[in-house]
Image 1 (cartoon, rainbow, N blue to C red):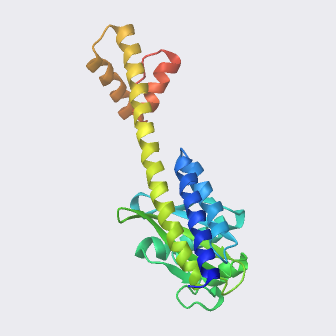
Image 2 (image 1 turned 90 degrees about the vertical axis):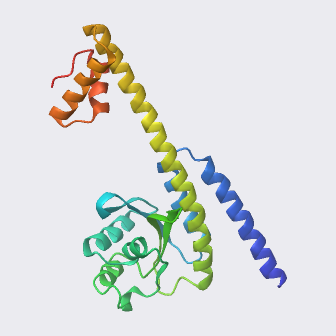
Image 3 (image 1 turned 90 degrees about the horizontal axis):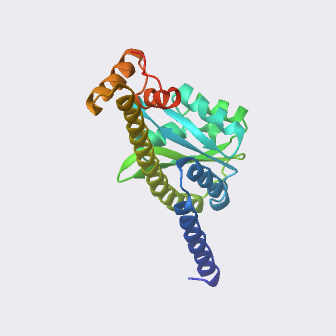
Length: 234
């Protein structure tokens, strides 16, 4: 191994160590996603922009964050046409390299759209935790053949770090939301119990009936009770 290779390896090791620390310091999914896309452009050779595709229930996908506004339009074209590196990466779990979208036969409709929007090459990696693919990290370049083998190697490592961090913050967000919901419902039950001199079960029945009849989440009905102090309609 040459001195140049050794110093490059040390630099990458420091970069990823710092990235890992920064990712774990974030306390919400939104802030973690924003850090991921910014750091991806800084770390992966050839990338001029980055975005994240997230997969939701029933196969719905969207782009919650990107480093440039035009990326949202690029991704929307992929979702609308149902083809492109983002879509393929989420579905297959495989790295998708499109180094010359003008001549890529895999996505004949998306290629011209990407070029029109200023993207000539793309590199997409799946985001996963425990073999569950929940999205893709997408890198974009404004010139063809911008991505190299080194881009793919570094991108794979980066995406692995990012996937674990995003999964952890999503789990934390869900837990935080569950605890907040439980506290909100508990406070609303207390108000109803005091006002109507009923048991907690009877108070919960009032909330549930209002939720079902109005097709509103139980948490939102509880918030209404806390705000107004009134019995929910239902």
